[in-house]
Amino acid sequence: MIQFTISHNFKNRLKKDGTAPVQIRAYHNKARKYIPTGIFVTPAQWSKKYNKVIDHPNALQYNAEIRRQLDELEAYALEWIKKHGAMTLEQLDSYFNYGNVQSFTEFWEYELAQDTKLEKITKKKHRTALNYWKGFQKDVKFSELTYSLIHDFDTYLYAHKLHVNTVYTHHKQVKKYINLAIRKDLLDSNKNPYLKFKAKTVPTERLVLSEEEVKKIEALTFREEESYLDLIRDMFLFSCYTGLRFSDTCAISYEDINHSEEGMVLNIVAKKTSKQLLLPLYKLYECKPEAIINKYRAEVLYDRGLVFHKYSNQYFNRALKKLAKRAGIQKAITSHVARHTFATNLASKVPIHILKAILQHSKIETTMVYLHLSNKLVNDALDKVDW
Image (cartoon, rainbow, N blue to C red; front, top):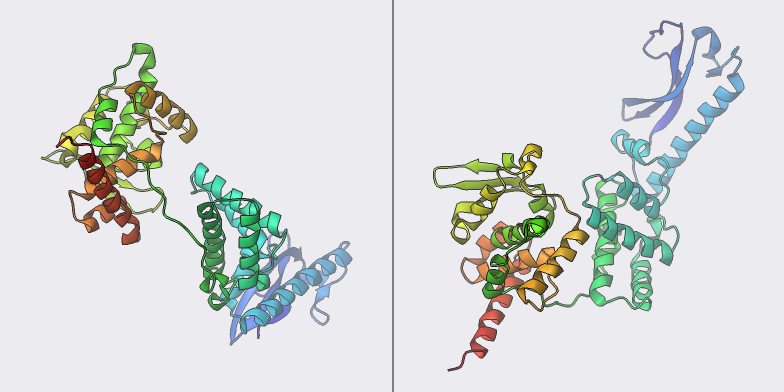
């Protein structure tokens, strides 16, 4: 077990003002860790016999603060041992990252607030799930994360008339932060309630555009004052040709375009997966992605390095509705339809593992959905043939 004691000037070195730090010494298996208290006093103001501040105008306050910090560390170590059975000096570091975090709910809130890499729309989903979680039970300690609790949360979500897949999505968020807590050594992996609980989900039919519908969007023309619609149309088509997510399309810069003898190669790190993607644009859709890149090369956006523009997803989707109406397409098109369209149209043309790599899916089952969609499109097309 870790032993905590108070130490003053353990390096035997004074500051220019003659003071030295008061620290808490953590000792375990012949190893030591010194934890600063933020208090500095001179050797004359420290009693080695009683291990406390003396002859200082703030002696009472300083000693109370040192005692408070020592008590908190000891209580934290005891609570850890109660949950995990043992504690190392390395695991003590979690106290300094999560010292004020007393529960799983607080941990979730803290991590969500600290995460600057999440896309705005993704962060909103995490926040929505957290709000449902807090509505279910305001504060949940790590020790309370049980199968029964998750089962009750599931019942709570269905009581709010949520769709089965929406409930599944909220469970995904809870599970994500439980797994994160496990990686941070705040929860034992064998205490994960999702080892036993499996949330339900049902397959949904993904909206895609046929090749004919894509051609209708390609054929649209715009007046000079509608240049923003022209740009949004091209961004949507670029995703139809490449399968890129909306967030990645918005962020493409000219530095991401490599030039080979054959043509352009897109070289990016996908925002969602943090994985590198090398995509030969000259091999896709008869070089149409290259043509779009070249179209905007001389535009003002080139000064900022971006190929396109960072529209909000909501604004982009509203503009897509206008484009669909103008093209005579009776479908509720959104930015993600472009990725679905690319995947579905390509599913019948390349091996499924190649499509999985391009889409950067972690599971082949996710990619297989597009193969089924592709087969359905073929069947639908055959049904319309007047033999």
